Figure 1 (tube, rainbow, N blue to C red):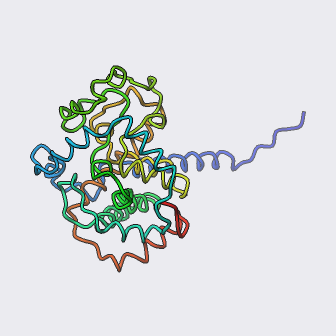
Figure 2: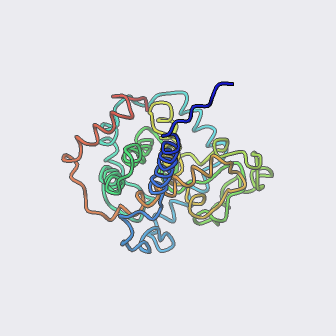
Figure 3: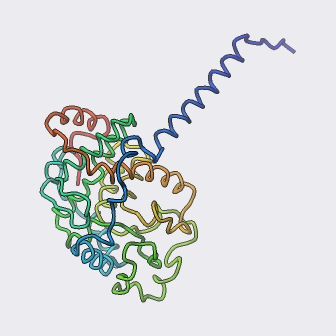
Length: 300
């Protein structure tokens, strides 16, 4: 049997590798830290106070909750797959979005492009990775759906929820679901409805809107990681990532996604009170960033 040759540096290399693994885990924990540096001094109690928001927000949710049915969600997905609405680059899409005003959001009167830049800049200031910065930059571009021929704002914006099973009482204004036909359906009104326990959120229908639309647009047309795609798809899914609803449908992948979405949420929500960004000054940086993750044009 040949002698075993011991590398005198092997122990040192193993220690170095172990330290490097620990460093990566520390950095990853910092990336996912929901107690983000930029919002630690903000008064969060002034945000998302929907119970005292203007009447148009309450009326909006009543309409959304009554119309987001299983039948509508199947139809919306079929229409998405059946046609392309436009072909353009990300920055062009941001400029197009600027004409939209969001009825569901009581926190800001900023333009859409200002909110996107504020979100991205807050992420950038905290030293988060480039893929997360660009995720922040594009996260609301799904609102273009409204300009492409949605039925209203109720199928574009607002908090999202799962259709096809019982509406959670952790949704905003849960009593308004009583006007939804699915609320009284023998199957859709049960805990699991058309789903299986722990089937995973990839296998459920989240109410159709800008999150779901943009997720379907970019998932096969970008190099964003799974965490970035989760931030896009679930950032308006407040009953899940803030209130803890729908855990009976989650699988292990969703637990990782939940951490990512919770890390992203402060940048989406609390950056809205920051000073407006200088769009033209920031444009070269973000166009360079976009080019790292997207082709020059994509299908919408």
